[in-house]
Image (tube, rainbow, N blue to C red; front, side, top):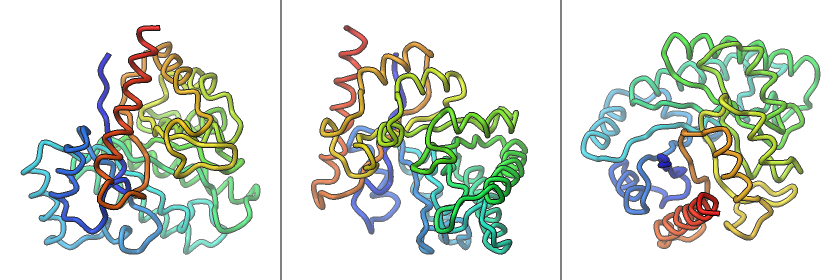
Amino acid sequence: MSFRWGIYEKALPAGRSWKDLLDSAAAAGYQFLEISIDESEERIARLEWPRESRRKLHEALAASETTIDSMCLSAHRKYSLGSTSRSVRERGLTLMKRAIEFAVEFGLRLVQVAGYDVFYEPSTEATRGFFLENLLRSKEWAQESCVMLGLENVDSPVVDSITGALRFVEAAQAPWFQLYPDIANLAAMGKDVPGELLLGGSHIVGLHLKDGRIGEIRRVPFGEGIVDFAGVFRALRSIAYRGPFVVEMWNENGDQAIPAAAHARQWLMDRLIQEKTA
């Protein structure tokens, strides 16, 4: 069983050209890069690039065997789809539409949608209603464009598990709106990670692989957290998962970022092989 491996953009050295980023991903042993569209206006601006900026990425992709297969769209923490502010919701919807258009233009298969109804304001029945309404609008655009949206479980009560995310997927009733779980987020929220993956089953279209601890979802080195990777890979084998693995980590190592990303992939590969031969 072979998998396609991707690396989160923020794991690699910052400030490099697109060609250098793609080459760095390949040097660390990955087939694709996951681009980040986070809350920073600099990264959000990528969705509205002028022609010259788009041309540079097209040229970099044409010159590389490495692709950009997925997008981590976390800008909705700032421009929440469930916000009580109409202008914030409308901005969030605009970003979603632009993200889908970006995916079409650059050949991305998958856009990960963060499962926050809101992030910087209280979650209420109203914000959850707006969130569902706007996810349903988003899945229509995705379906029209043949771009997969994958809902991520996060550190928020609304979608803190695959069980919670499935409510939205089932409401959408569309092949282009599915699950993109984060296993460390599940562990950090005290969930039964293998059990949740089994529940997600064929709805799982991508996976973020990282380690975590209770209440701690970022920057936990592999092997120093509580994620049961053997159980994760066993559950994935049970559901016949064949989608991509994206290693989510952050560049804390300066010039050692590429070796650190390579080490992470090898560490995970070792656990995957061990589970297969157990």
